[in-house]
Length: 79
Image 1 (cartoon, helix red, strand yellow):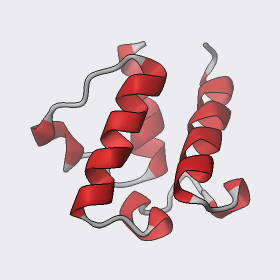
Image 2 (cartoon, rainbow, N blue to C red; image 1 turned 135 degrees about the horizontal axis):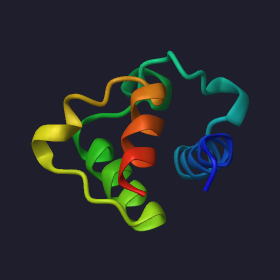
Image 3 (cartoon, rainbow, N blue to C red; image 1 turned 90 degrees about the horizontal axis):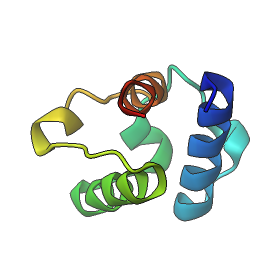
């Protein structure tokens, strides 16, 4: 999967799950703020990403993923 395809797919999956517009997602934006995540919905997001892309996100890695750009890179490195 090419990086641009990955970005589009991640944005679509997250926008649908968290009921926001794809256009509201910017690479440099903070994930928690944009998706309005609390600790429980953050766990939901991790499970969604793991299930959708077949990657494993360890609990200590979650805190390093702050922006959408870091999320895209994280997934791309593990595909």
